[in-house]
Figure 1: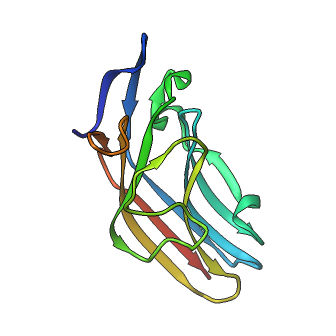
Figure 2: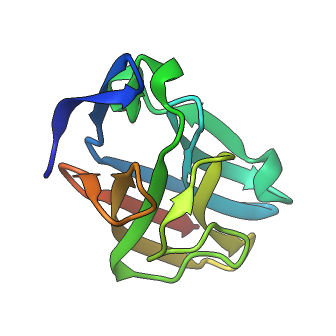
Length: 154
């Protein structure tokens, strides 16, 4: 299934699950490392990761917008698993959560790419995000549009 639909998010707690896709672009002349990606949060939100930083943990995390929350109300987001399926592009960084595997959303999950500052490097990626309640036996939702990442160090 793709797009947006209502489900019982948790016993007795109705929720709306959606994955609308997003394009995340990070272009700069990075002094440290350039980062580009997403963080799927246990609170039901999705942040984009961008910026110049020595480590992904200190990069800039910005909620994409409330329309791209993966579940509303956010409090209904317990017991889910997420999967980041690569369609094409560069490999995720080693510190990222694993692509192509179901991962319990027991903590925030990062899927990101980086380029070394001053390298004039570039990375591009196209992926779908999927949600499940049972560890992947049944996929509840696949993103309506892909998540597209474009990272360039000028």
